[in-house]
Figure 1 (tube, helix red, strand yellow):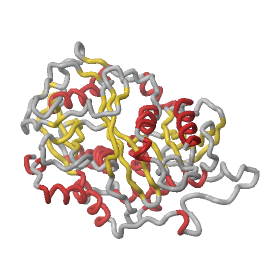
Figure 2: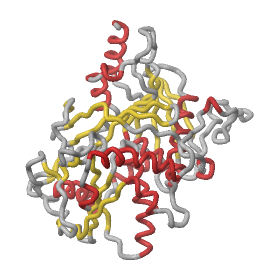
Figure 3: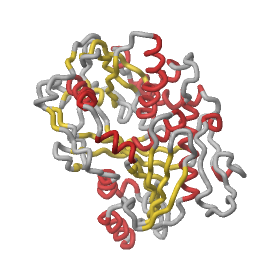
Length: 422
């Protein structure tokens, strides 16, 4: 593991580029056709079906073989800001919740059950925050985002899409997901498309029916962070403290996927404490726990399912490595290993019928083109609801002044007021 933490100035720059370059090199040319350059879309049916509204007859295919093309252009993500949520979930436009990675022994013997009963404050899952924290960040940092175009430009932000990293992760993994569907709400406002998740009935039922064992295992991931993260560069982790899942540090990154300009935010576990580490997001570390692997079948499942989610989640914001604690059945971490994101596609190469990074990225690219194609009315009270179930096409419906509206009045008013005065 030590070799992954030593940074010389030259290697850090190479590491920053490697995840993006290598994924593209593995998958052929660095290219993604956009909807303007192709006369017809095999992915979505375009003709109206007799007796149906032509709009509702269109869907987007999720069949993997349609996305086995060249790896699309994905620009190196750049951090444009960050924010923190405190122990009461209050927003701060700063990095006060940033933590520092302290490398554990290879066989650390961490007890992940410790504190579950008496030192755990759990975030209220029933509170749906939608894009609110991200929108607060945008209002506080508009000068970094305002359009470079003319004053008459209707696009208030210089981006096509605003969303959470987690929503994009779901899109990347969709062609390989066989169990969980999703609902994504899209609103076009001032030229920018906002994407927010809507809880599905199945997800709501799953949450209500979670077993105590499942609840405790969700705690284990946070506890592993407590064993490996310090509050500042000079301190050590304090595993005797309280685990409070309200607290979060989030990066905000800007990038481009083909012709789609993206602004998204995602929670970051910690950063490298080496003073010579590269600038964010290349200094960030993602922490995970997983069951220890003792059979070939377990290893195959780890490669096919877990590494897909880990890769997608970290590749998007440019986080270069995942540190994983492998635990026994009793929740004791027995080994720790590091997975550089740029090497994950090599790890899975020999796996039969395994996932492909190029399919994930091309599907996401086409999904964003599809959204641009359908979500044409610029109105904060209009929501395009995109729905997907495994083995089906993505479909959509349009809702006005409905329970799906998610852009808050304070955001719409402030953005409108500031632009009108501009």
